[in-house]
Image 1: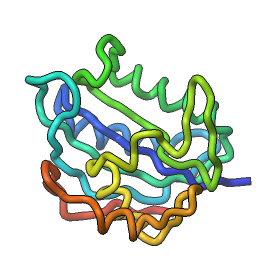
Image 2: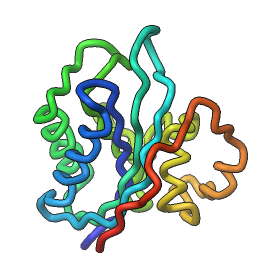
Image 3: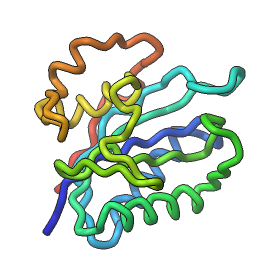
Length: 167
């Protein structure tokens, strides 16, 4: 059975916009999955160590038969293929892929937390998520439409004018 999953994409190294376009292309061919749509790209202020370049962020929606852990493994393999190095928490990176939501599941394991544990405090995740899924209700019962009303867009600038939508 297919489950809708929302994945956050971010990059601030090695031509970030190109990294996100490449990641979108790779996600379109993810085994056991169908690419649904992608948000606009956004330039965002970095979180973490001072002196990092700005990020480019987006969110994509897919339908998948992969389990949450299998999806996580697939996403980490894509990150690795893009040159991701895990050396510094919240450090600069070529590509970061995070599972935000996996259907209506709530998962808390050592390796994976869904809904993503910090998504509600990250306007660089919520704004692109609202591009493609404004009317969703999170597994916690919270409406994205209500959450997005309470955030500010400081440090988030839309870069692209078109959404990629495919079914």
